[in-house]
Structures are given as C-alpha cells and as structure tokens.
Length: 475
Image (cartoon, rainbow, N blue to C red; front, side):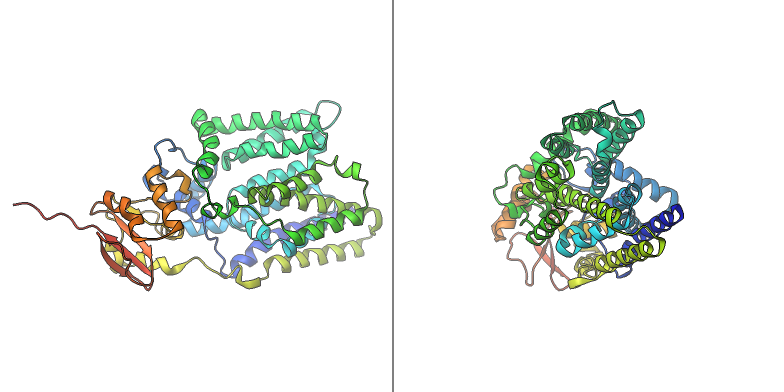
C-alpha cells in the first residue's frame, strides 16, 4: 500500500511539472508583471532609477521576490527570459505542492483543478502568470489543508507555530499584500473557529515582523505596504481605470452551479458546512469578488479547489477501492484529464505572445526614437513598459508609466487617467510642457497624433515617437 501511495504521489508531482512545461512549449509568455520582475532582477537598478515615482513611494514593492530572482541571475547568469520561464514553472509547482503532499489522495486535487479550469478559465490563466501572488495562494492552500492543527484544544506544538509563522513571513516578504491575509483569519471567526483565527493572526503578526526585518527597512516596508492599496484606489471614479484584478468580478455563474452540485452530492448538514472555514472562505471570496476580483481569484478560488479536493478524497476513501490496479488507473485518468484540460490552447489563450509591435523601438535604426540617457519616456500604454523593459532592462532612461499607475506622481497620474477617458490632443499638454529634448512621448495610433508642440517620427505601423525641439542657441 505504501508503494502504491508513493507511486501515485510521484505521478502527481511529475504532472505538476509537466503542465507548465507543456504550456511554455506552445510559445506562451506572461503579458505583464512577470516581465518587469525579471527585468528588474537583471537590471540591478532600484525602481527610482527605472520609473518616475511619487516621492513617498521609493522602496521596492516586492523585495523578497526580486532578491530571489536577482540571486538566480547572479549565480547562474540567467537572462530575463529564463527568469520568466522559471517563474511560471516554479510558482505553479509551488501552488500544487501543498495539496500533492498533504492530501492522502493527491489525485483528488487534479479532479478539482480540472473542474476549476473548465468552469473558471480566468483562475486557470492566473496560475500561469509567473507572479509572486501565487506564493500567497500556495500558503493559503497550506492553511486550508492544515487549519485543524491551529484549532486543537491544547496549545499547538512548536513546529506548527514555526511553520505557519515562517510561511506567512516568506509570502509577506515575497508579495507584500500581507494585510489581505487577515481575510482568511476573518473567515475562521465567521466559521466559529475563534481559536484557530486568533492563532492565525498571531502567526501572521510574527511573519510580517520577520518579513519587515528581512527587508532591512521595517518601518518603510509596513507603511508602504499599507499605503499601496490606498494609492491604487484613491482618486478614481471608474473601475475601468483600475487593473483587471482590482475590478469587480462577474460572479463565475458556471462555477457556482458546479460548487452547489458538490454541496448537494456530499449532502452534509448545513451546520457542518458553515463551521468549515475552507467552505466559508470560498463563499466569502465569491461574494467579495463583486468588490474586487482578487478576493475571488486569489482567495476564494484556491479555497474552493481545496474544499472540492477534500470532499473528493473523502468520497474516494469511503467508497472507492484501495486495491492497487483500480486506484492507479483512477489516478492516471485524473492526472491525464487535468493535464489535457489545463494545457489545451482554447481560444489561443497560450499562443497569444507578448505584443511585438514595440520591438520596432529596439532596432538600431530606431534608437533616436527612444529617450536619450537620463531622459523620460512618456506614454499612456502600460504594455510599452512591460515589453521594452523586459527586452532591454539596461536602457538608461526612466518610464513615467510603469507597473502600477497609482505609484505615479500625482500630476502624471492625472494626465494618464484623463488619457484613458478621452485621448484628445490637449490631454498630453502637461507632459509636453515638462518635456526636455532628452524625453520622448510615444503613442499608439494609425495616423500621426494630432498633438502639437512635438516633432513626430513613425516607428513601425502603429507607433509614433514625439520629441520637443531644442531651442535655437542665442548669438
């Protein structure tokens, strides 16, 4: 029996590695933050040397993740492209590992993952973005699987305290949205598990303190982490101006049908369900997703995968055969199904490569269309930063718009938000007034932008680079 369990677990772990390898083999590349994380690690620069930031937000937003990527770059000479590939593979495996190690029937995880992929494609795509929030999802999965260890009548053993504190500390260091970890703790209280909720908060406090110490700037780390969500949401009246993950989520109606089907199938009393913090976290994440998609994508959906996995595991152990041949066959079918469902290029979701229209800016003949050393690149398109910085992290100028508009200087943020609403010629006037001959304004347009005050040069079919002319020298 032990030999059989070991074989199934090895098969499950192998599939966790094969899934991202198959997706990357189709030419897939993440479209956004994974690119800038890799570029940041390779450049060796501080964000203040890369972006024009507001003066009260100067610290690295992901100190732990950039430290790890930078270490891989220095030790192994990994390029930005290699770092992106390693991020996609490593973070997906990290998300799967808690379930594949803790569950007695790891094949149940792949049934749940396939069900989630079929009913919630956005959740599936999010698992392959190569961004450090997946470490938070991995730690959340571990908490959902092991929460009874925090709910014992006796005081938990010291390994439980240390494991929970270190895991929470590492995820806070790698992805400093640590304040959101209070959300699962709240669900523990809602599930009438106050003992587990209080202990989770104690571990969270210790972990955040550990993360703050690791940064070397503990006070700045705490203040900046809390200021980030305020800067993102303040001053905006349109959800469309926010990143997709911060916008309201439509509620995943197909998944709701699936989830209710599992509830009906398991036929557990309502009193048992509402005392299960994983079930409560799933429901709460879905509800709060109508405020911000991250509550569902990063908290509710991973909890749902764990809850479904545990229910399938319970059903397999109570009704399924434990004989070697039937169980191995079932595990093989579950792993194959998950592999095919998650790696299928449905609608070109994995073959829509990085926007290559900006590659024209990096050709030798287009060098004059980029800012001079020490200059600033003005634009209203986030994709330009991701594409150009990823390919050339060594370029000696700064970008006015980077990965998070909320971190721009207030005067620049006002121009950006106005351009999102209506790209009229006068929108860019404040930028043009501040531009020097070393700066460039790059816009995407089919024809010459009707913006006066700049000399425009076309770069490729849809890009235009504008610069102010130096004032003539006086005799």
